[in-house]
Structures are given as C-alpha cells and as structure tokens.
Image (tube, rainbow, N blue to C red):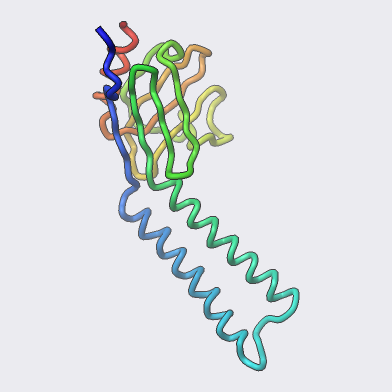
Length: 171
C-alpha cells in the first residue's frame, strides 16, 4: 500500500496581537518621522541637506526595511510532519529547518526556556541546543537529534506533535 502524501501533522502559528501592534507602531512612528523630515526638507530652509540628508534618508529607509523584514519573519511559523520528516519554517521569507525521521531520536512536550533552549539560535544557548520559537507561544516540543544536539520547536499542540513523532519513530 502506498503511503499517503498528506501531512500527518500540520500547524500554522501566528504571533499574538501585541506583537503585531508593537511592530505596527514602530513602523508607523518610523515612517511618520521619515515623512515629516521629508516634508520639512521641501521648504526653502531644509532641516537637512547634502550628506546629512542622504545619511538620514538611507538609514531611515533601511530601518523601515528591517522592521518589515522582522514583521514578515517573526510573526508566522509553520510546522509540518509528513512521510519524509519534520519541517519547520519561520515567516514568509524566513529560514526553514528539515529533519528526516532517521535524524530524530526522541521528543517530549515541554515549555520553552530561554536558559535551556536559547532563542532562535541565541549565542547564549547551551552548547548543542537551538530553538525554533515563536514569540508569545511558550509551549512546544523538545527534539533530541541523532548527533547529540537538542532543538526546541514552538507548538500550541505539543502533545499531538509528540505523538506523531513517536509514531513515526516506532515505524
């Protein structure tokens, strides 16, 4: 019998509303300041001119691009477990991580701990530990990888994901 191509587990996480509000507020203040300086610069006596104006507008445009990038890559996360393995992707443009089933040795549902798991590749995480975490979601699954490292994956359905992983590992 052929194995189904449908995922056996699929979860799409969104950051909490306060995260969207904070990033939206930052983007609004940043773009408002940029617009205000641009409008005042149209006067006969501009606030900034020459190299100062160039540096200001380039740095503010870069700041807006960074805020939009963070908004697109820190507010969405998808987790899919299928016949090939476990797949995690952060954001629209964000990084992804795939583990084949043979690379996972165990899993358990647990709460996220920055001291234990770090945060998104934090240099302060203990050696051999990484985190694929979503802001505002404190629960998830801790994976033990065959190379001896550990990884935390945020999930609001950690018990269900652990059951799917256990089922796949027993096959």
